[in-house]
Length: 388
Image 1 (cartoon, rainbow, N blue to C red):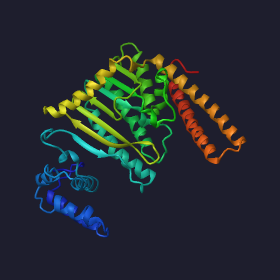
Image 2 (cartoon, rainbow, N blue to C red; image 1 turned 90 degrees about the vertical axis):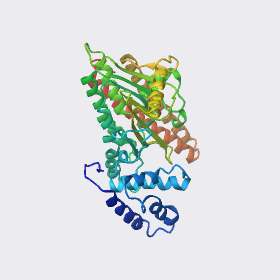
Image 3 (tube, helix red, strand yellow; image 1 turned 30 degrees about the vertical axis):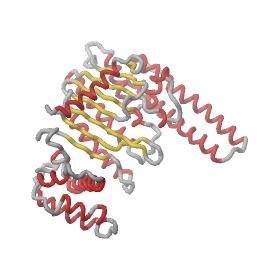
């Protein structure tokens, strides 16, 4: 067995490190015995002689109690984060995967104790190489269900979402280079998020505008570049299409690559109600029926959306221009309304809670206007026809 860096590592070597780690890190924890220490060693460490033994202990089908599952997940976490044991070496079910396949699961949650730079470094190390590794294999098609709630522009800087958007700058450039080289069929479905995570409901007639508002700056730049290139003669982007989906069919992000790989990204709400990255799964399909069905389910969802004229609308360059202009105008109108509302509340000596609530909404739309100004600036930097 090898580490991600290619270093050979023996099972017994990892086992001893694992046992020492458990004993050391849980030594002074009065609840460790019941939670992790003894159970981890008993179930997953003491009697194992090789990776097969560890696998059989971790996937004991006759024992799926809550405590057992928690201990199993703790084992995953320690082996991956402390000893760099890659999941695709042992976190797989042979009924679904063959030996030479790529399958990986990672958690994208950041430790609250880390600094901003530590969070950024860890997130990019975890996320970018794994996603990039499978995208680079594309030779015929990339289809993406893009849940735009993950690109919220007003997300606090110390959370993972800015790193997520930053990572996508590189990913989108990779998409574009693959389209140029292999003339890929590329479809991206820009899905408006569930309304409860936004300050107001969305009208279906404003779907294009709301998509422009809610997608990240990295996503917007990618869409602009692709649609402009699509208008060029003899373009490699002829099979490149973007769709706006008014009502989501799923609340996670997923993609299908060459009908062989599935990438699934899941998010969660944090204590502040923000929508942040949580889990990433990358799965390669083989001939086993179970995972073939996963690809079929993902692709079937996208195919149904594409043919649903009441739910899915194709976005062209004209619609992009119009949506961008309307999105900016909305931010200006909102700011004018909220500035007036805050002034009225202050003049009437309303309770401080009401004033603060109005100020929070004002700050939100100030952020949105600044973001739209940057999006317009980018559009004008690459388009022959400028937005005024």
